[in-house]
Amino acid sequence: MLITIEGIDGCGKSTLTKGLGDALADLSPLFTREPGSTWIGDQVRRGIAEEIDPIAEALLFVADHAAHLAEVIRPALAESRLVISDRYSDSRYAYQQVTLAPYLHDPLLWLRSVHGSWTRQPDRTYLLIIPVEDALERLDGKDGREHFEQGVVLEQVQKNYLLLAEEDPQRFVLVDALQEKEKICSFIAGDIRQLFQSSQ
Ligand code: TMP
Image 1 (cartoon, rainbow, N blue to C red):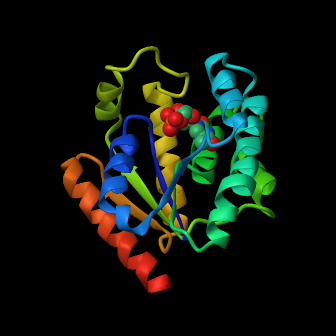
Image 2: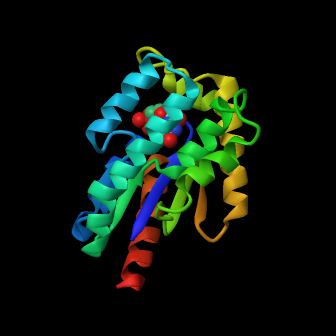
Image 3: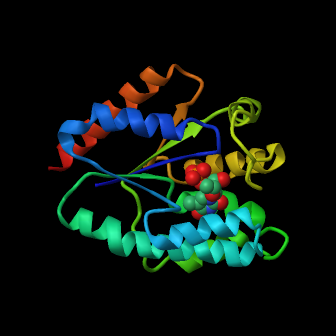
């Protein structure tokens, strides 16, 4: 079963993922992420840091996704494992829709057509929602902001996420990221456990 965790920078995904590691340890989940599960992920991070051309950047994210699926996700799913990915295709649909807007007539359509025939849809996606000003406050403690981590960009990215969730309410679960982190973690862990056990 494939679970994904999504949300804007500063929404608390990393803390949540750590918490889920403890809460779901008995199910031996495989934790993975985009970008970064293969060597292509390192090139993506370089691309982000160097602020390369947005189309090149988008295609690097897609290349990382293809390698991630082939090398990490599909083999684990073939063994019926619980796979939890910190970011996945919805990150592309939400973020690259913003960065590609000046270059393409319909970035979402383009991004979907690039993934469409070969990606694997998540079984459930938890979307952490947070007011952008709170996310920026959390990011202020971090050294050097990536170009995505600007208020106007994150505002649009979060809107895109909400539209994606509206389109697919069966898959998305919206979570208020301002709640206590223990509460968020135990709610999501309980939901994943139930879903995973009912699929066995
Ligand atoms: P991270 O902070 O979760 O490691 O992700 C790095 C940045 O890359 C973050 O600002 C979100 C962005 N990103 C995209 O723009 N598109 C994508 O497809 C992915 C996976 C991440």
